[in-house]
Length: 341
Image 1 (cartoon, rainbow, N blue to C red):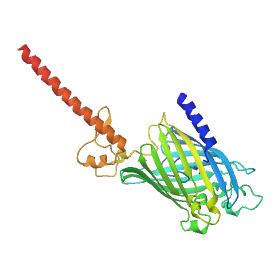
Image 2: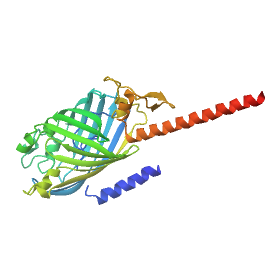
Image 3: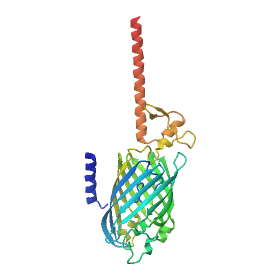
Image 4: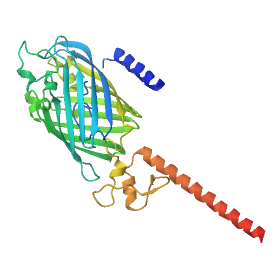
């Protein structure tokens, strides 16, 4: 309880101090990945979003918002979003849904389809078609909340440069479509990547169909702290858009006490011995922990995270110490038998 209270105090303080990019999904920044929350798991996120916009609509302000998601049968994820209210414009709210079609293995990616902004209060298919007097006409992010935005996405994890990576590639409609000719070159396409240079810290980058976004995520136990910036390409322009700033800070908590799976399959569980199925690396020993084997298992072991490799090394040392102790005990028994004779 003390940890929870302390965390809430820290969050409240950060909301007050940070010029804090909207996180429109629970996975990446604004683009989805193919992974779903496990059955009986839920995730909650609150975020503070700061905008200082010069073009195309002048606006400056701080807006809080919240998201929640839940997993069903290890195949479906449902979510909800509320917040991002601007002046006299209506409150933004909508639902999200995602269905896993193919589960990731060592050789195959994970594939999912979904729909964002279901029943969105911004119920126009193209926010740029709004005219003065329409709801959301003065909302600087009106195109991000276009309703019934369908998508398909492919995700794959891998170890590269001695770091865990995740790459996502997808196509979508409405909010995923570029609004200007530059964005239309990659019509309805989005791509994102995440890598972890050190334990618990992830660096994220993406193209969401219109903008380039970057972010950082730090995780501790079931808590995650996210800092992100949207439309960073505006900073390199010289037409007035370089004065635009969209940044945000978010905190999420994953409740998975009753879940029996994980949102993303662990790389160690994706390792295979010459095939595409999922098997554990090595043999099951030492109280059910994975102990490395030789031969084909060594190649799979190289895919493990640094924490798992450290744990396996500790297990190896413990087994050697146990072997030495057993040898000393056998020698002592032999000596006792000789003394009795």
